[in-house]
Image 1 (tube, helix red, strand yellow):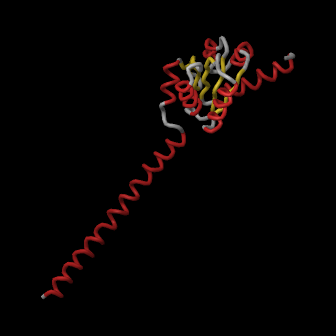
Image 2 (cartoon, helix red, strand yellow):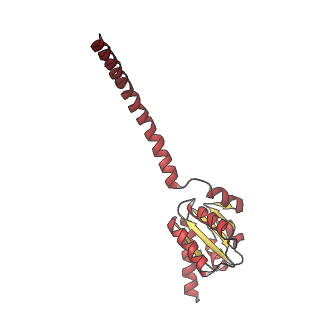
Image 3 (cartoon, helix red, strand yellow):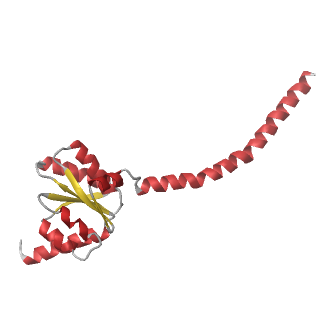
Length: 172
């Protein structure tokens, strides 16, 4: 890899570190090519991405970035899992580490905050952006359906009372 290629990789990694909601660093020693392809596919399905990069270049890319403190995790055979959604990459990495013992999560970063192993686990348990939007939409819609039910209820009560009165009048 010549100098121009290294500069391009550093620039790409810098963009990843700046624009990602979360970046997870893990050791992947012992993963087969098929395992790595499986990880990439799962990441893609969930709106995340996987990147293997030289640790030295990743540390250079981290210089001056808010998440610079995660550089301590960059040693050995590391892989970066990242996403714009602050939860997706952590969920993918956590789920994959449960399936595959050779995939060991070291830590990561969420914005300016460095995450240790427990921090990545905590982030992975948070609801995703889509789940939060669905919950909020449900909460916003609930009062309207309650009002509609309350408005409709007296009319149905009156109708059943009139029906009962009519039945009694016909019987008499």
